[in-house]
Structures are given as structure tokens and as C-alpha cells.
Image (cartoon, rainbow, N blue to C red; front, side, top):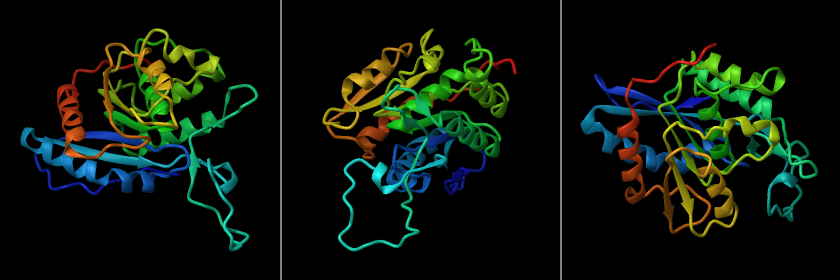
Length: 260
């Protein structure tokens, strides 16, 4: 599934900041965009006076979910068409027996394709499973991070090639979490140094706070904000304002490049 770009406001002479948006489990790029559209508009207004133009790029995970894969799914009383498929997707599937992530490489390949289609990105933002992915993408693109040889590191090398070796300016996570498979721990050791902003919901019952804190603990100097809501992206100006300030602070062109 390819990335879709939000319409660009008139921004002649403005500095574009391309942000790849990664949806949560059971969502799609289109649904994530619908849920964050108000946030987009507020950010554009807040950053306009300093000539920054955020450009939001929405990708959809490659792994389609069946209705039975969706938490809390209840079969409808009326039978559905045999070929019915909900617009629900994932970046990877957790194997409950082993704890490993199935189809993870396919998810990262889709991220790489979205980066190539955008001709490179400046930052990544994700929600829930997308938040976990966002942190992994940021870590993989850090030029000083040593990647595993062979298949375990191929996905990260693919991302570096897609982004022309450039590190990200920043990463944003909403209800993200630490990815626990052993094969991914190189992304957290050493800690992720890409500037990171983490939003946690104090009433989130889907991603427990301890899981999100396990991610922030593996980031260097993370900025952590706790909103009084559940498992969602807060879009009010109260929560958009610190996000705009974070983007402003880190949207500078001074990033090193990774070896390809």
C-alpha cells in the first residue's frame, strides 16, 4: 500500500517538513488521516508564522486483518457478503507463542516504499503499533547505529537506502511501545538518540503505561506528555501546541548521513 499525501496548503517560500504517519493496529492510512485531520490543520496554522509547512504522508500497513483478528469483534446478526473484507491492516502480527513479530519485514518494506515515493522524509509519527514502528524506523536511520549482518538487519539497510542515508530530525509516538523481540534490541542498545516526543493516555487500557514507559526508557532525553484520555491521538489545540513547539525546535538541516 502506498503513501497518500495530505493536500498541501499554499506555502510558497516555506520550509517543508515531511512527516510519515504510521497508523495503529486495525487501522489504515486513510482512517488515521481522518482521525488526525484536525491536528494537521492546527499544526499548519501554528507553524505558519515561522515559515514551516508540515507535510503529512500516510501509509497503510501491508498485512490485511480479518474480522476475527480485530479485538472485541462481534459477528453481525445479518450475514455479510462472502467476499467482505474490512479496511483493517497491521504493520506486523505478534506470534503469541514465541513473542516474535510475523510479517515484520513486509511492514518495514512498505515503510521503505513510502519513504522512496516521498523522495525522503524528515520525521515519523505513529500511533500504537505505528508508534512502536516509528521508534524502530528512527533508530534504524541513526547513522552511528551498528546494524546486524544478514537478514536481521536487511530491513534497516533498506530504510537507510530509501532515505538516502539521512537520519530523522525527530520521532513522535502516541501510545507507542517497546518492541520486545530479541532480533530488534539493537534498535534500543544504545538508546534511541533521535529527538522523541511521546504522548501517553492516562486512561489507556489498550497499551498499558508500563509498555509505553519501556519505550521512553530506551530513548535518550525523551519528552513525555500524559493526556487525560484513553487510546487515541489527542487533537485539541492544548495538545497540538507542544507538538508544534517540538517540531519547530527540531526542524533544522544539520543531520549526519548513514553509510549505505
